[in-house]
Length: 139
Image 1: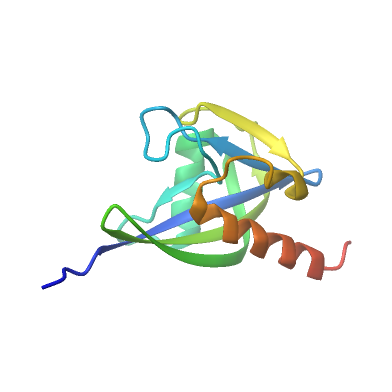
Image 2: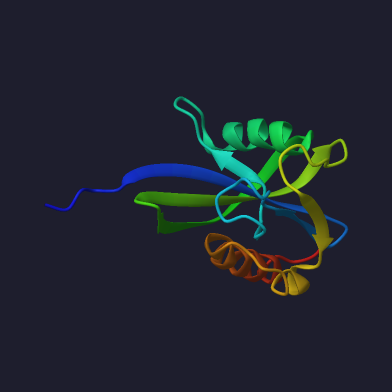
């Protein structure tokens, strides 16, 4: 009998500033060490996705973020867990992102982000963000 994988909701922030997005490198002790990702984490019981994102970005980067809009979701099975990753665009935040969890941070253009070794679950979110960004008229 096949067991249903445990389902986990995770939020990820596509943080944008001056046409660049923030990538964070997973530390050596983490799952998928050394891969780049969008910062974020698990949605706790009773939290909305934006609330979880604000909390995670405070913990991981030391910033106070304002999630602007939902970008996309992507499901992936990892280590017998079904992870649903929900990406949100963040273009307003207070403070300067600092490495509290990740080993490295990098501001890159969305086009250049594909040159980094991104975590597989983040790739479709990056593509969805680029499509959304190209479809949104500039101010």
